[in-house]
Image (cartoon, rainbow, N blue to C red; front, side, top):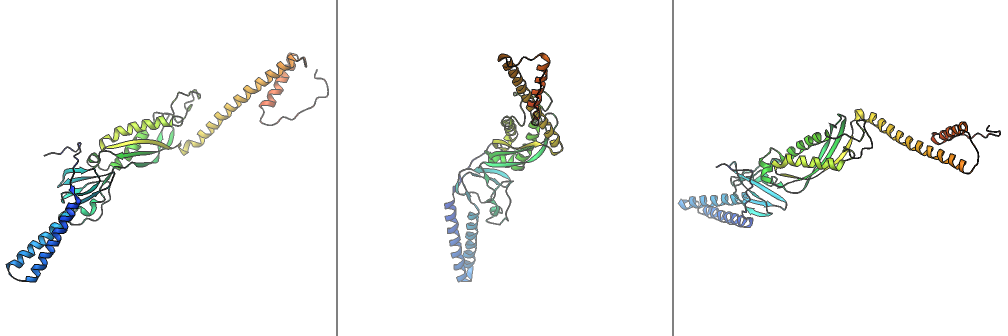
Length: 327
């Protein structure tokens, strides 16, 4: 019979307390029978009591091998002789088929021990699937933006397992699968946006243009949406994606810094010139309104030139006192 791993089968095993009690009873009874047989030392009864005592001791070990503890926010995916047996989601102490093995490809196996035929009992405790929210700190990687500029992008993904059966059986290792898909999503989404406004030499004041630096939240939401589509088959839920690092690659960082500095200098100069022209215009209007001095066009041009030099210069102007006539 073929089992559909896409549909989780949640099981509710018997209480582990019952299994522990049975194990103790079988062990105590088996030990008592072995002691009785040792006292007889001969006859058919000796052999029967010894055999039954050994069987009871083995049964106690088998029941011990079927005990499982599931903590809150954990799940245990079990297989029986290579077939999917079921998933335990609810926390508690349980008695399951002792020949069932826990499966979790991301867990590090501990040395196995033979316990009632269940050779995985020693490592089953480390093979629970955590359902808690976890963080994937994606390494910084070099990608190309929309214009082909190399940029360095790093992101953090908040995720959790919502379907442990899919997580275990649908992919080889769901943590590795998520990390690789995160790398691919970052690369695919980054190439859809320019790093900054005006990188293409166009209008640098276009506030509607989406960029990696200016629209970080929108870019992260797109990464989250695309990443969720990719990891649905693994039974994972992506809660959030945050961009933690964004910069130009070292080979172009110096050139881009110079470009940004040039843009800032030009913008500052534009403001200075606009202010200087307004001040010159105001000065000429005040002089004309108050009849302080009557200047011809040539003197006005000279005055405008001097004022612009003073207002737009990088250094303080050195005053010169003219003791004669300006005409």
